[in-house]
Amino acid sequence: MKSKLIQKQTVRLNHNWKRNRSGHLAAVSAAGVLLLLNLSGSAVIAQGFDACAQTSDKAKGSCLEAAQSNYVNTLGKCTNLSDPSVRQACQDQALTDLNDAQQTCQGGFVVRQTACDKLGPAPYDPVIDPANFVSTIDNPYFPLQPGTTFIYGGQMPGGFERDEFAVTHNTRMILGVTCVEVHDSVFTNGVLTEDTLDWFAQDRDGNVWYFGENTHELEDGLISTISGTFMGGVNGDKPGIIMKAHPAVGDFYRQEFSLNNAEDFGETLSLNEVVTVRFGTFNHCLKSQEKSPLEPDVLEDKFYAPGVGTILTVDVHTGATSELVRIIRGQ
Image 1: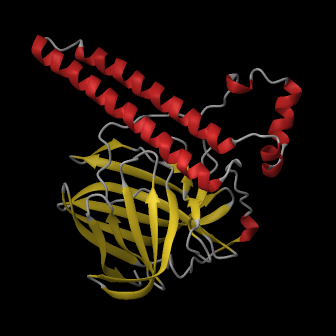
Image 2 (image 1 turned 180 degrees about the vertical axis):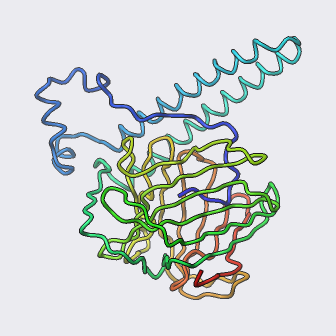
């Protein structure tokens, strides 16, 4: 689930998940490949196969290739500028953007490798059994009662941002699971700049899963990008856990999995924070830290109050905050 706190990159790398028909397994015998694909997670580890590390490596390679492709494509656009000085400026900017993109790819690789140290080598392949999910999301730290709207506000680099997180009465069937649909609207200086549908479901143990999102960023009323859009079960994308049933300090987990598109990680830091926001003061709050390899320079602290949910998001590096201002119930 993308944070609404940070300014998203203007240039996004577009990656499509594809099956690897040759790649690093080409040298393995056909029988060996079949054996590998049919091993359970623990058996794969026993065979010395580090899925997490290999995923990190492949994601970096794909990212670098996309950066180079975008660079060459931009040079093609620059070629069609008649003014030599403008054309040169375009080429210079393209090179700067390439260098920035390559640094982001490397930074993302470091974030993924660090995550692998905590997650271990097993493939990320959660078992989603529709019979194991319930119709109500009542996790104390992330309750989603249909008809409830959470209003957040904060001063951002681009101006004042207002975030309306509306839990609708709509549902969406994903991987056989009936998910609650949340309509998340972000306004910057009063203008709609992001419009998103998020899908959540809770299992019988109380874990809240994030099954996907349909997101649009807007500029001058037009869609500028749908980057970050994903749905569990489509193009190799998989749901993650947005809030555990019984959080413990040190918990580290994937909140979503859409390689090079949506890859937030969450880590529980504390369960006893006292937090004051415009809506009030809350005790025994959960503090988590969230990071994504897609924005390696961004680090966020999030605070969740029992019985309420998210009350505060803080950009660790810039200090920018988005805090709970109001809750509207019964819509």
